[in-house]
Amino acid sequence: MAHTDARARLPASQTLATRLTLQHPKRWDVDDPYLYSLITELISNVKSSIAYVTPFGVRTLTFDPNKGFALNGRP
Image 1: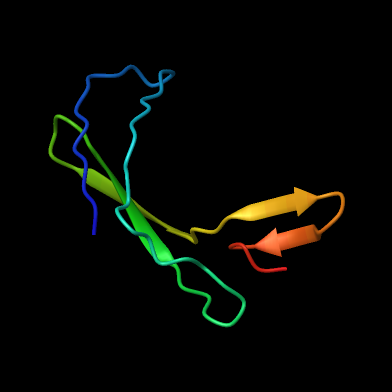
Image 2 (image 1 turned 90 degrees about the vertical axis):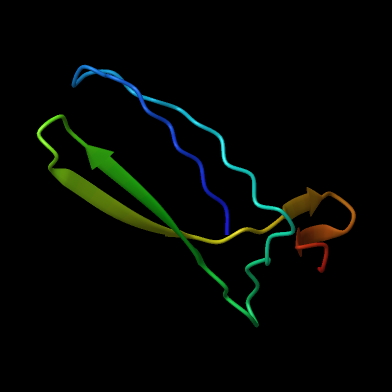
């Protein structure tokens, strides 16, 4: 599990970028389609909040003209 807390006062038209690092992530694979859940919570001054859950997988994709496509280092 990883966690980051980014707090900022933003007008409606502005965005906030942050970075999160997973130590030793479990890779998504065809045989084991493991997904993480990213939870983003927006809190206003009036204490109302909105939470978004975004599923995602961690994987490495490579394309080689001689070897072709590889997923997580496997052809």
